[in-house]
Length: 381
Image 1 (cartoon, rainbow, N blue to C red):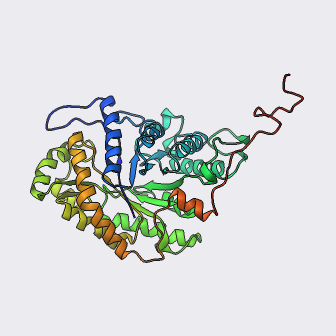
Image 2 (cartoon, one colour):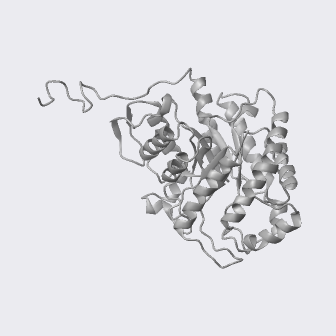
């Protein structure tokens, strides 16, 4: 099982100091956080995509490539890649390039996002959100799987004889998770292709997450990819820890109360009771996280949100120390002991290359005698 963290890249005022970090500071802080995640033994760092304040991550591939150059083991992912408003051709190119630069340590999570105005900013209509997700992803799969693509659809100009470059590393495209909070159509899409399904698992009660994951599992089996309990599931989660649970609650409360997403709403106690948010000691986080298996079954990836709502970098790094030293080692051991042998591990580039029978050189060379595609007679002397 993979354990890691994800960030939504918010720039939020610290309610205890009144200080708001700059974009430059938050960008550098996120790089520091990712490197720390590898240092403490986590497996995954995932970064969201947004195109509006108060977020900075408009180009996650740029940031992840920079992080890839400074890490050696960390799996790099997105916590949202906007399949609805990005051009599938650009997604195919950008993530294949990132895959090469990171030596295969890349996957991505497709999502529709939760910012309505982003659709017209990129020439789309939010009412077409689901059809855009379905059509764009179908094209993306073809761009990665086929060397030459002829295609026409509803939402972009046709392609004739198009080759997306670079080709996926070793002939194997990045693994795709489909992330959704509330859309069964996205769970169906993940199941249809045999991809992973990632439930955000932050804002909703466990019964909602259970229904979504059960639906995905049943459809995964229906489409012939394996047994329902072999489907690839990931969960989000949100934690804040101190050695003493009362200290954790006291310290986190002002951040919770003023958070842009859920501030000025239910109390911290009510929200913690009704959703998977866990504020307390490392042991409480361990017990709550192990309980997720009771309603989603054996799953492959657990990511925690720990750097939002204005929390200062020092505090986030302390959270990572607690995760790496006290929480994740126990979770690894306990989840491994519970997992049946027939349930697969989280997909990696190496495992997917092996499943395909080994690496191949997928480079597509232009027709002709030189790199421009011209024959010898056409090349100037």
